[in-house]
Length: 533
Image (cartoon, rainbow, N blue to C red):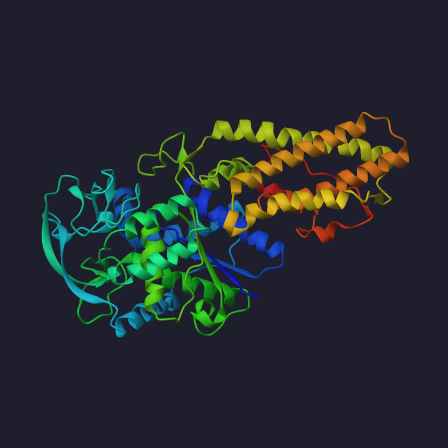
């Protein structure tokens, strides 16, 4: 069986995770993995922190701490937040010797194959700090869309930005610093050599991937691709292992793919299924299906640079099968901003609101094709009116009806009920499969089928049926409710656990002649998440 290797872009270790971080890639990846396992397919879900980013340095300066201290604090907080959200990773690897050796093995293989070129490039330079300013150290306007951006690529339009391409550049660490340009000799990855192969790769993906992601790939691939930096003359990051670039470090983004390879191996060993070699799971001969859940902003790196790197390894690794890309999730119609205090921390939210309700609202409002908005007031209103109210009415009605027939005997199920359940499962399944993945449609289906069963149960309650007929009608409702809980389980993880429902998403599992009543758990906005684990 082909294993699906699920990766999220590693979170930068410059603080804890806010709601905007979690809502798109991490909840989506968790939902997909839970679905895969419910239908009996093999998956490995892993991540790690991204410690070498220049954003760690700028965040540490803003917070009045040191980069190593910030990395240590963040690396402890992030997996705790994942756990609080019910994002169940198989492993969250440390940045240890195994990590570093995997990164160095990955880049050294490319170096030994002659895939990197030594180039003299023009880089922004801070005259006061006497240092090169790259990636998160430098700001300015994007030459493609004119939005305020950082070096490397634009978060707004997604296009790459050449080394000296920012308009009116400024230092992030010292806004008043004079910026000049100096030449530096660095190793680069000549992306233009892979453009035709990348065009063919994306043409093959055109029917499966989200339109905005494909549109960006088409725009970028329509013109020559700039060289991609492998090393930088900066001090933060993994030291360059190459003799031509002494004193330089690896570009932090270059670590992304080998980091993913390593954290997969670490997760497999964590679950007792690992291999001594850190890259075994990603080797092409093992026919794995690598899948990356990510936000739109670093799509150029993950969608083009990393895919080209894998191609450059000349068949050693499986190419990325799917990039499941989401748009920005905003807070009260503005971008989340930790520096401006415009943020809701994920762990704080699930300490106040049950994580099932948080996950439901995040899925319902998921930024799949356009920016969407998180609002605490809207969460309360929408979840209360569309899910909690109807669900609890259904639970109350079923409790009354169960008391009338007694809960000690099996309930008969009509021959038509399994076909209705098959129709329900057929509606949910495309929402969880990668080709048609949609958290918002899945959450909306939970609402639709909850209200359908609520109305059905209410009709049964008002019909004054004899005990035998009432038992038969209840059997239909309870079996369909079991199926609905299974279909909802990748999102409403605690509800499924409290219901004691074995998650089954194969229609044949519901082809039975009897079923049993069960206490239907209620949903409550005030119930702490820890009470439902």
